Length: 325
Image (cartoon, rainbow, N blue to C red; front, side, top):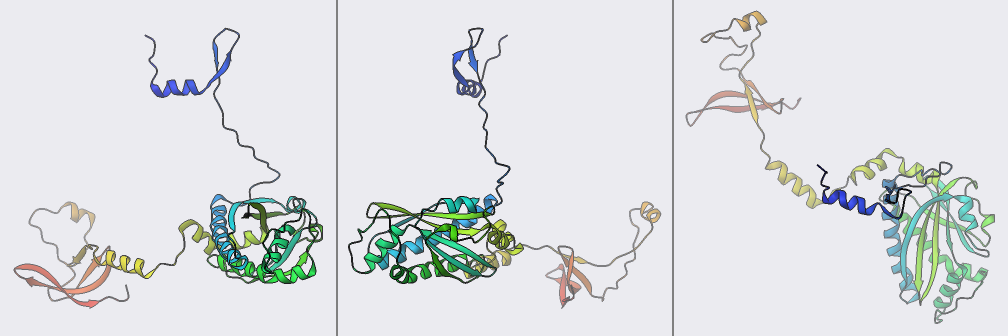
């Protein structure tokens, strides 16, 4: 008898059908295979959990920078985190047009240099707007002047403060932009063959789109994220809890049932004596009626007490808390 295909098997066959016929005149069935390209010369050094953590840090950073720039320029500015990528430093340098606007910063703990790169056109528009202009000056090419660099110091230093603030949940450090360069070839924070982590931010204003890039050396990222405490945060989240969470935890613990076991005494006998025990035999314990007995919670002795009666029921009165346990 021919096998009747299930609906799932029919769907799988239909999904794998390819137009055309084979030599026998029947339709060809090809199973699609998912293939992922992986370059062994450039391995992914940062895990998915670490990328997710970096993404959360820079999403918060983007929101704060957007609020700050909108207030400074008195216009609506949209910022969006496009992505965080691991590339070679040589690739990052080649992606920067010349003349550019490259701010080189320093991080103190652990020490490292990093880069903030934006388009010179964005600098020109920002300076024009700060001086009361309409915010429409976007030349095709522009070289940032010394005066413009001086005016932009407040903006870039505020961005440096926001970077420090948003990294605080992971690592506390101070960063500051120390110098400015037009040509990326004059900036070498790491060797060209070393990997870097680049955060790409898209800026939209007045229908114009431009980019803002923050470049960190991978060595610095690795030193920060490889810390055992940071690894615990990545795996289990932050260890800090709110007062509300503490109250809820205490409430749950206080309402949890705990079994208390009172051990009246102990007796030691041989295996042969144990096998010879019969109904009615009496075992002599190592405690007397008036002696204190141990009370256990989860197999841990925490109290001492005496045996008695309460309301015609056997009971144990706690006489001592065993702090040494």
